[in-house]
Length: 278
Image (cartoon, rainbow, N blue to C red; front, side):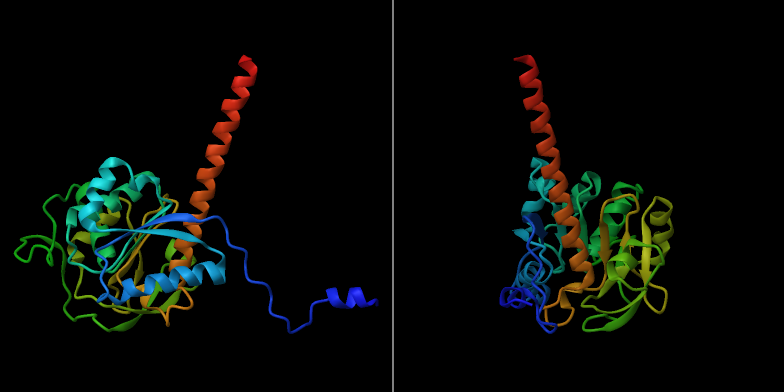
């Protein structure tokens, strides 16, 4: 073997090269950003880790819930490659959070809702799709006669518990396992009596705790639509993104690539038509 060949041969213990970053995908982080919400402070760490460890580059924009309704109405949110409704409820604007969820659901934009985002995902679906217009979130409306999201019998603030994902679900695919230990920080969850109506209208409750309480929801037929009552942002120390966060990032990057391919195809078709006309 020559000296040149020896130099080119990788040593068996050599660290493999880091994945090459893909072009950035634009993600809307919907929530009322606060240094006092731990999941919010984790976001920069998670974004850095996704880029450096997985080659998944996300160009993130924080959108306060107070602005989200107007952004949705203006069509701005529909131009993102992913929407993530983050914890931190009660939100400054319930309507803004619901509008962001609806845009992602109706426009086929990859979506993740965590903690308060999970709660409002169920609320948006119940009101918009199921016609349960009178249901409410008890944190936003403590006197509500018909809460869809009600106080939990036992607080989950600081709690850690096992979640089981249904076989064949998006939840199982994203988690990479049927069972996962997850961390919570919430006092509210879905009232069981309304859940059969949601599932009858197409929403899938694909993850449950050991008592059978719904902890993950997803929408079959959507490119990526997932909501969790637990907070994947709190996984580990933030240096290794939770599998669900990684799955959202991958879906966002795929959406961005599809958008670019569509633009390229339309441009090629336009140029081809111009040459034919000439």
